[in-house]
Image (cartoon, rainbow, N blue to C red; front, top):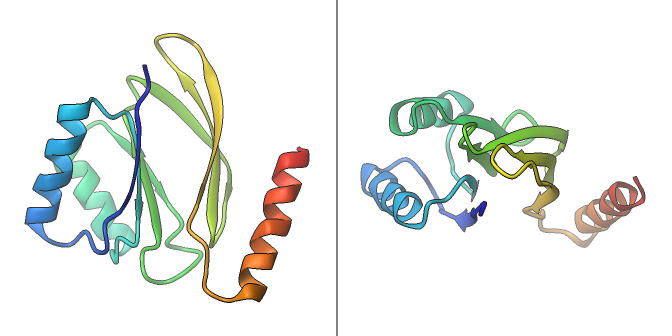
Length: 131
């Protein structure tokens, strides 16, 4: 079974938070993680994954918006993930379980603050739903 974790970490720069997350992922056999509000740079998040999760793969939306809003990492021995869209408010991907060959689509959302920004998000999600 593929287990997915979505966590608003409110900053991922402290070693104590790294250890807490690592304990949870290992204890619960999580294969795909989405961290919200990491407050990291792309380089720092890539180093975190490289050092704490050797062999795991990651993708972020950090190049779309400042502040390290959304970051995903997954175990490529369990999942093959392909991103169809990486935007400021969401990341849309298709994953295939390497063990069962079952595939699924996931859209992970971390919306912005204003009604206008959220309206744009809903319009984009509606287009994804039609596709």
